[in-house]
Image (tube, rainbow, N blue to C red; front, side):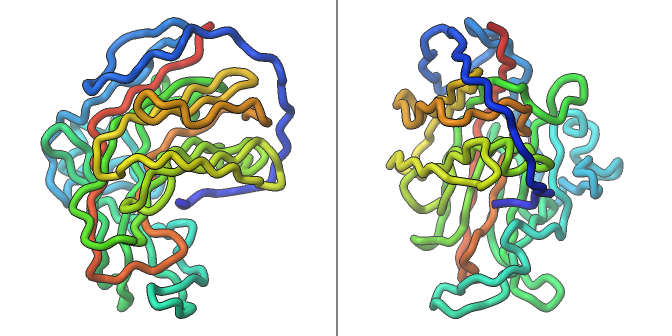
Length: 293
């Protein structure tokens, strides 16, 4: 899900396993500092206050100089700009009655993203855009040190997130915090943890590094309206996903060996939501570490 530039590519696998300290259980507050085997490079608790309309970005995702949030946030995040289609935008899909339709779903940070109560919030809803009722969402990407676009290869990221104010179930509103190499997709794999309807029990999808784009589905089952802490630990030859303290994926199957960009994508998928349906995704904090064995 999301707007990616995807090109087929090949990835050479390194089957070597690396040693790493035991998993560190999550805490409810933003974790600060290095861990055994990991060097922290991002720690953000979203302690900002900007209403909807403050986030306006250019075609590279950089905040516009005149945007209200520019001074404080331009070196911390990029945002897919207003009007970009999601992966499903403009494609054939279904409406909630099962009729075939051309999906109207776009990223619009100026209409969806705001910061309050120490959270990054993305308000999913529909508006008339160019004469079409369009489902609106956003993509938020934390910036990495030194201008790096991708994490790794190998790294760890963790965040605390929930859905709130969702007016229907199923909502056909989606979330997918992910790690991806768009220029080498699907050859370099993809982590979609979690991914699905924001009103459905937590689930996710792992795409091993493979040009045929196979998918391994992960059913986790947690309440999406509760605060959950999601963790990805990615080392040579092994990938682990956690929800809170529960291990939900532990695989050595074609683990990606190239760097991956970490993004928070929020928007509808292959079903056009009812225009009356709304919902908000709240991200309490995010932390990212480099792999340093």
